[in-house]
Image (spheres, rainbow, N blue to C red):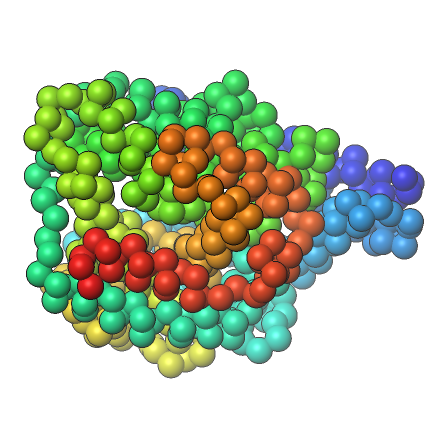
Length: 497
Ligand code: MG
């Protein structure tokens, strides 16, 4: 092992340990921290982040990374050196004053967004979006980009991906999705969902969710499930993965699919190679690939017909009274009910991506100057009408519904849809590699899929960037057809199309 590589590793380990502490404090903030602890916690988080950032961007780290690049390294070591060099060079290009300005502007914008949403008052939010847009344009200019400023922002979440690539992929999605939504609407089929509104004891919901995720292979000796207002999954290391969910006394499937989703994220983290803990070689490739894991388990497995062949009798055992007059088919149809709706996070599998397409088109248009910030409510409502056939009455349920822009996060939304697309393509390959995979799922045996994901994706960490990983795993670049045919087949059967 090279001397400079070692030096790089030592610093990165310190940074990663601080990041682990930050993750734990962040998790605690959302789960158990008493309300009055908030301001102290905020300061502690800022202090530790500052130390981690300083350590990582130190000239000592810079020279260790650079010099390690000319040492003789194994393939795994090259992955660590390549990715740390990439992150280092991006953070070095950002002037400290700009980073600070962004942090301050977004913390004010978040509060402004909360008020604006509360009052459905978009004009009140406009100056904040304008300022964030200007700052993020400066970020993009500082980092550099191939074709358009949005490229640079996108790469924060999906390294190695370009706006043009995503636009082409999404373009292939729009027409078939809009057509499928239309056909479903015209089918006149409307599944019964009344039984989901009955009362389901929360402790039983939790037990059922834990049972399912244990069957998925989530290791509860290396992870936990707790409650938070907004579900998430975080980790301090490969053997300490924290998931959260939220429960309501009705809609037991909301918590169940939430838990399955977060466990998909959790399995990705638990499946990393522990010998590279804290290093890119044991880190997720991108947000899109991370989301492919959660959405595969949630939708392609958890909302599938084979899955409920085994788990329907189990859920009836847990909730015998609530489900006494419900057939397996009725249950399956209810959890796959497609209805165009205004709110992204409540959208079903078919309409969800149209919510994302709209956001991507708006974000891109903001940076190319196609849309002015003032025009967003009109653009939003027009696109909603075009894609989903409905439009909100007020901005609260429209352009003001998501928190992302108040953080100055532009380029995040596309990763949700990329996750769906990657998931279908990976799953098709898993089915080809394991011919009786759906039979196994149908008998409640979920471990073969976890093993396949572990070998082909989890255990590789950042060895490949997302676009190379897809080729490596499936033999071809990202192709939206897998997702479109999956939806057409599944919902064609459900809606008699
Ligand atoms: Mg997720």
